[in-house]
Length: 289
Image (cartoon, rainbow, N blue to C red; front, side, top):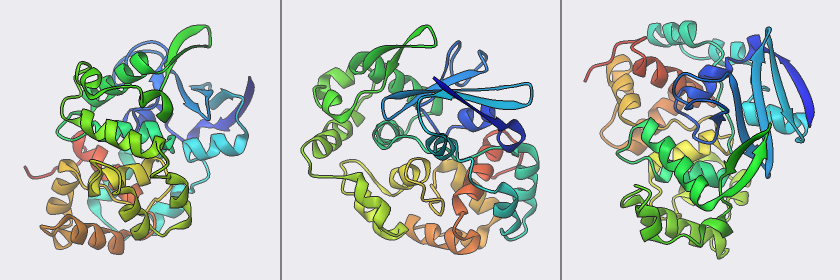
């Protein structure tokens, strides 16, 4: 494997991988959302991606190119520039102060999609368990860094899974979403490659063609997989933040609230969302129930 070294001051790896945005990374030891190893792994284009912060340096081991590594961990984004261009806000300033170094990763499309198809009415640790169970049941067993792990299945592999088999993993009614969306992709009735040629509004409508994908899931996949940093996923926590700290932006309709926050924060609105979202979850900022 090749090795790349980056200044760790440019990214808080632990925070980035455990803030609830990704379900595609794992610790080598311990659960992702708990105590354990500081060494993490994921896959991209079938290749393992190993990342660890040590002695003030972010070390990444992989056969992928440096460009692919930078994209996966969003190391090209200038955080100072992003936050200097947002309208002033006490809530956001406090969030940034406490969570500096949190970056928006870019996971592979299919495992990211399936993770968020599992997300309705589910807490983050439960979604992660579903993701891992699907990988263990239908993915490939591989050895990474001397340990046996499971690569998340490709669409053609997961297409072999029945709704019943997925329900046995605790996925529940979401099994139908996964099976039908996987079928669309595997049968050539849907391609995410076209998204890169679209603007945000077109991309959101395009991804909603997949079964079970509504506005929030679409925004999550666009933000955390396809590089649409203007996407602003609005879940319960995001809604609380908006109502508490940006009441003028709130609207009863998702689409209108989305439009309001994107107009307010601009092309990097997703960064405001992720910092505010995690700050609310961690009680860094107060939000109303």
